[in-house]
Amino acid sequence: MLISIGVVALLALGGRDARAQGGPPLITDDPDTPGPGYWEINLAGVVARHPGSQSADLPRVDANYGAGRRVQLKFEVPWVRARNDAEVRSGIGNAVAGVKYRFFGQEGRLLSWSVYPQLEFGAPHASIVKGIAEAGEAFFLPTEVTIEKHVELNVEVGRRFESRGSHAWEYGVSTEGHARPRLELLGEVHVESRSGSRREVIINAGARPKLTDRLLLLLAAGRAVHGDEARPRLLVYCGLQVTLPGRYAFDAARRYRTQRGFELVGRR
Image 1 (cartoon, one colour):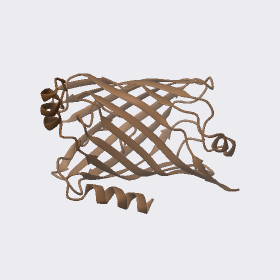
Image 2: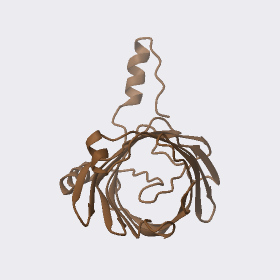
Image 3: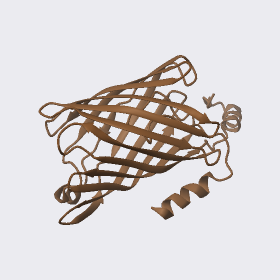
């Protein structure tokens, strides 16, 4: 984990033009996208403590790419370490791939709106046998709305469909604002409603300190205040977010292809 964080930090030092977005370290997402040609990579440790057990994603790798001004591609996969009173188990967890499309508005405007379909893949058989990953696939279809005036308010509502037969609704409301020029404070309430179970309500608070122009520290802590007895009693997220701009000279490529009779649509 430390080696991976060091690699990300080296990539980010000395850079310019960070473009932070919603989501990590919170559960609730927003309509913002990284921007055309930008990579946004979140490398984090996530700990969830339940009565009698504890699980940790060490690390959770979340890679996002801006495939245009309004589109974001995502791939996320964790290495899970689970512990209870009897044993410790570890292995690859369920991976997630998704596409966010912001069809209205943009960051800094009064209103923006997106959809963000995501597919969760079944983990390796060994992880399922160990009980650190779920069998089967799941499809999550949320929509995100941001209202930004004097404060920023993000709302996410989505339906989760699972091949194992249990479906759920998820709701989230979050807010974020700058306490200082290089410090952003965050907060959220996230709800999961699943048939046959008590509604789970999670409260999170966090921060995004800006370390360099390309590197953010992601911090959050919270707990479930309502739900079944097995609900998480502690949730902790600690990670780094690095933003890497596109390294392809689109203007030069346009001139090159135009000379040869080709047309290229650039970043802008």
